[in-house]
Image 1 (cartoon, rainbow, N blue to C red):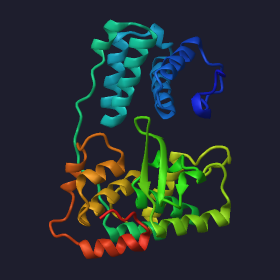
Image 2: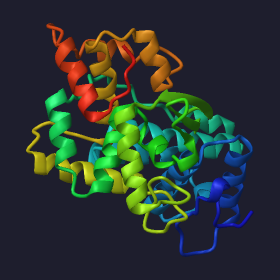
Image 3: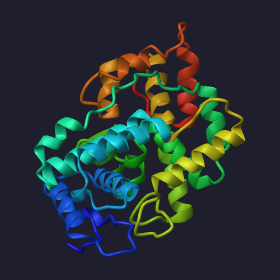
Image 4: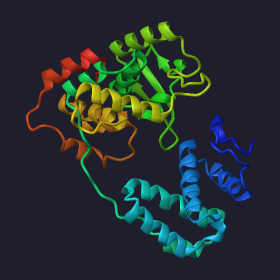
Length: 301
């Protein structure tokens, strides 16, 4: 494998030669079957840590790690989730790659904060879809909302993954390296067929600037932010907001919570009670069913 290439064709963005330490860390993550996105995130975090001190990580110890964590928390005011990724990356580097096991005890995880997700109403979802800057963006948004896919799962769809005979979409190696199927509604299938006839995308359903690579998560995040602003939404909207809306709107329509768990690809029900608490007190079943039909959301009730 090339020094600047990860498994599955993901490339490492670097202008200089990969150091032996960096290559060893890549190899350590590869043999453990880490997801390409996880590998890239860990490498970025270790790079940020090294650049902060201007030294190679193998020349830095517990005191530097402690100072860096304080810097992230106090000066940069980095969010809990990002700090958790940084800690995970450093713990892997020192425990696995550098085999400095005692250092692990001095790299604590920040205490997690549990917040309810922002939920878009059916009307707000429709406004977001209509405010998409391009037809391609509208199709991507509709696919994520109509199936509840994670943004990375939607962006790695290929045309053969759409099974119009069984009306299912195959998700290959989603989060946790697991395959699953999600329902494909007739309305969404019609939209995707119109999209395919116009653009003829290959091999990815949603290609990026280079056809051999899928559209990036950053591009979708930017498109969502622009559409949210154009739609005049006051809520903070991200690609994951469409997944949350999918789950809550199914709950509002009467779908069993365990069925939603399977559709979302969750191994546990931990997040679903939080989503359940986001439902309005008064059910809007008839309204939600009509909206699902309009936007092509999977019919699971």
